Image (cartoon, rainbow, N blue to C red; front, top):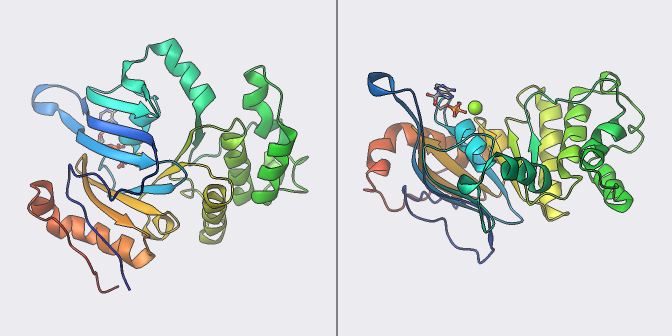
Length: 276
Ligand SMILES: Nc1ncnc2c1ncn2[C@@H]1O[C@H](COP(=O)(O)OP(=O)(O)O)[C@@H](O)[C@H]1O
Ligand SMILES: [Mg+2]
């Protein structure tokens, strides 16, 4: 039974009662000027709940990375607001932003960005060391266990598979217990088996460790590991799928292409049952 629900632009997702880890209000980003202007984000309203794994999915160029960069304080908005918990990110100066990223946000990128001269363990604990704090050994052990990295901690990145390297990067993103982890196409450089492994570890981090993860992907089968898919098209929120399957995520992407004009004008309130 498919439970797909598309919510038109501007409406909040079905309420679950959980607090919101991240919010955007009328968030806008344009590049260039005049004739050459690109509206990468065009008035995005979206909420992401704590303790959930959400995928942001949309075609190439739809604004996924831009949205993630603005929500994570990696880039500045042209208009509107972004919040991390109660903190308005769009109102912060450079120093406060740097501190917020260090203390409250974890990042996982397509390139694993591990330091080749350091062991897996050193790579994982580096953010804590750089912040001048000491590593919580019990939390490190939990992460290593959950991410299946036992026995790999003394290896350098060059001695690890791509999937193992990305799991080290996930442990590094989680070591300082951030409020949220942003992952941009985390399986983009992995074969499908390692990709599936990494995705199930991301899901375990949410289910078993209570973490909050927002993952950008263009891949419906990756999105299906999440609890929810937020669809984006042409810089606007274009749909919302709870408990996605590869089929419903794919149907959502397809629906964007055919229903987009109706969805973006708010003409469609609910479309359910994709027959998947
Ligand atoms: N630095 C930039 N300068 C100009 N245009 C940009 C820049 N970054 C992104 N864009 C444009 O903004 C739109 C959204 O890009 P992006 O967020 O990277 O999409 P996605 O991650 O969904 O592929 C695209 O049209 C892209 O070409
Ligand atoms: Mg991108």
